[in-house]
Amino acid sequence: MSDLISTEDLEQLKEIMDDEFDMLVSMFVDDSTTLVNTIESTIASQDAEALRVASHTLKGSSSNMCVLSISGICANIESKAKEGDFSGLEELLSELKEIHPKVIDMLKNF
Image (cartoon, rainbow, N blue to C red; front, top):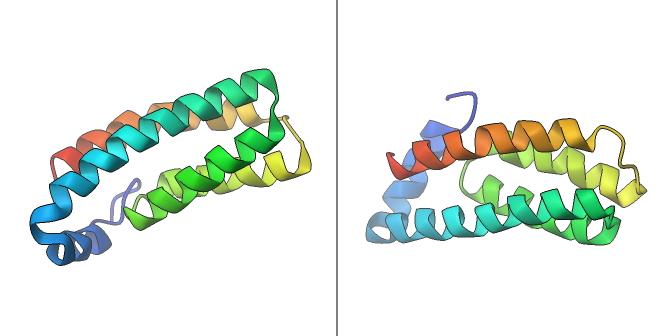
């Protein structure tokens, strides 16, 4: 298991999905990129409800793709958004934006 993804679980997902795995990765790349951008904009506008929804959605899809690093960050963002607490979100966003491209590369080359 790497620090960013659960390679063992991802291998099982790849076996289950077979020929559709590449399509699943492509959908995750597109959706997660949109959601990271949404998270960034909702932090900037301090829209707690939209931030909660976007972070919850990315948390779930990341978990489904065995990307526990992003899922964990999004769980923290979602928790803060539920409370309307915007403190520390810039740091979480920075971490998310740093690891997201690395995860995408790992998934595309898996």
